Picture 1 (cartoon, rainbow, N blue to C red):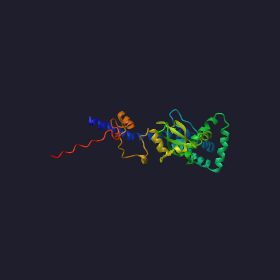
Picture 2 (picture 1 turned 135 degrees about the horizontal axis):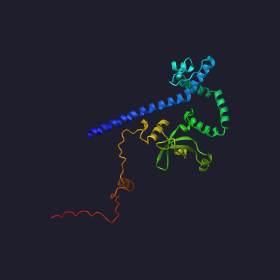
Picture 3 (picture 1 turned 90 degrees about the vertical axis):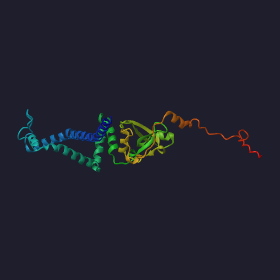
Length: 277
């Protein structure tokens, strides 16, 4: 029995150490596949058409055995392993395009394209939401929506992790006569869903953790605690019985505070003095 327990314990420890590496590899492979399929292949096709148009070399095609036509652009691509040009070129193009859109001229051009997109019937319902998500994750502003806070939700005495996304409604702030802010409270283990609550600013507690650490805490259901917030020497027993809870509320059973005696009711009688013989 002890041997089986030791084997099981070693297995689960090894699996816990192996799963993060496997998940990282899977995400990396899926990301590279996405880049190659949706960005690299169109770029490769464009490059082959440009070479064909400039040099006059035929594009070529694959035969039944999967061999490209000899003397074609396709054969040249396969011979020199040039398929990596598409993914690399697409990544470089995205980086250059992002840098250009960050400049003054690129920003003006982007605003012009956005003004056109909001007038297209289908795109005007998709683009604004996609832009808000993009600004939430990639904006350079380190404003309030980057702050991790704790709020008393869903009732007093229960604290939940949340993210400040901005100010609340003006009408609500004026009606309550206090400054309200909007806090997004994510749910575990899927933080993409949650609740938006309006909380007075003075009732919000800022937490000294990053957004990534807060997401890890929520996804793990509170098991992954930020290193700076861990209590290493925690010696508190969290299992409380019903009797202990009742005693904590009403006081110990049978341990009543004695009331002081009233004068004349229960005066202590001194012992009799010994008589002299």
